[in-house]
Amino acid sequence: MEHLQTIQQIFTARFLTVPDYQRGYAWERRHWDDLLEDLELLDVGAEHYTGTLVLHANDTVRITDEEGREHGCYDVVDGQQRITTIVILLDAIRRELTSNAILADGIKKTYILTRDLDGQPRPKLRLNRDTYLYFERNILADKPGIEGPQIRSHQLLRNAQLHLQTYVREGRKTHGDDGAWLVSLYRKVTNSLKLTVYEVPRASEVGVIFEVMNNRGKPLSEMEKVKNYLLYLASKTNTTPAQELGVRVNEAWRNIFEGLMACGASSSRYEDQLLRSHWLTVYDHRPKTWAGNDSIKQRFSLKKYQGDPDRLIADLGAYVDSLREFAVAYCDLIAPSRSDAFTEYRDQPQVQRSIQRAAEKLTRLDALATFIPLLGAVRLVYPGQANLLMDTLALCEKYAFRVYRWAGRRSNAGQTSLFKIGHELYHQTIQPKEALERIAAYLLYYAPADDFRRELDTPEDWYNGWHGLKYFLYEYEEHLAAGKTVQLPWDKLARADKKDTIEHILPQTPTEYWTQRWPNEDLRRCLHDIGNLVLTFDNSVYSNKSFPEKLGAPGQGACYANSNLFMERDLARYSDWTPTDCSKRRQEVVVWAAKRWDVPIPTAAAVDDVELLEEDDAGD
Image (cartoon, rainbow, N blue to C red):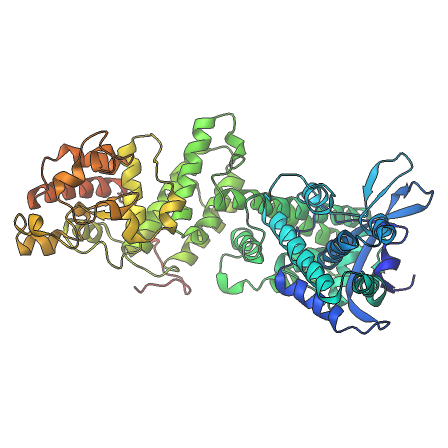
């Protein structure tokens, strides 16, 4: 086979398919512009090397088109981003070729869509499971469907289409409408761009290619590097179990990428976090030992397994299987609101929803990373034990709130110790009850009970500078809702400016109405304290009005008594707002908070086990 091929040669007598284990479309504007710049700088008749295409022939399928020509079918195991973008560009060119319908039709048949002997349409490039329908129905179809993008890859495909269509349309207008520029651009794309094409006989052998290949396209993520190294190792052992391992790797990566895409986490940041969290849980709890793909290479080096290929394949299989299972738990934790999160409890919808709500709190606190190994271990080792999972989620939430938000500790306070507990829980060297006791002991070490209660009881400025205020008030709103739906979505509250969604009952700019009723000392003491703060939909409605104006009555429009927020409606029980009323409400909130984030004193043995590891941070 000739390795250096033009786009025309690549698509001649070939149908291409992006396997399901590949990630979705990921190119962005800088990648499209690089390709277009290459074409603009390319002289007519010149050639330009533009990357690598790795193909794996599917020998079981061949397609004969309506004109009787036979085509081979190939999986695109590398190069899908570039080849997809080129197809979108060619589609944009053929749509603008209104003056040359014959060429436009030829482009469509050769690069976009052709028909088989039965007259059935066959896309020349089929994307993976998550994107192929959107690609065919909304990007390439002559009459696009009305469905909008559902996942990030859909949106990027749509963005690529709009960007490339704009480029082609503006170029045609600039160079005239006779079509000559379009034909020249088409020839550059199909005959001047060249790719190095490798065909590998087995999917597992793609790892060998990646170990020696420098791809000019989007850099490989750590997740892709790990997959390629595993496939490389499988290809070095010519046994049936090794070949089966290659299939298992591809299937696992398909499941992982699909899961990440389904929860909107297809970027390399989430992939890296998944790999790291799995490693900390299953192999080594110490963060400093994790070095991405290099850690996998060191752990599963061929040198360590010299003369024992069966053990190598067995250990690799265990890694792949545990990573696939861990990925399910990971996706549920980072996107717990999905209907298919925590599906082992789908036959118990109330339990499933309770677990989802508990997991949502960790994402709201933006402290999930610390607890993923713990929660992943519970899911994998104790599947279906809802009470244990709920207890662990609840304790992790209390740790995140009291240690990170309330006490203001750094995000690595006790983190490695918690990783260690998760690691031991996974390997069952400690029991769940002991694990929970130790978590509580670390929590109270960093955020002692006496300090927590003393700070709750002391009036102070809660409004300025405390990152946890929105979360605190939202939890109180859910408490007052008593199981009913909170009408202010958390995402909306989190995005909104604090000044728009947190209301001072006693206003920050008090009028004469307020200054006559509030001594200066009480005004300064209570203004930003928790007794005087409530959530609201639009703070500008209340401004510095008097309390009777703010209170209003049911049916009177924007007022506390007519609000959809339980916290504002709760104020309707006050006939006035004085320092005494503010103190009364403050005490109610404090009593609730002390109970809400209370942590029972752990056993003496658990307290004695508290030992700060090297990576733990003990400072503020």
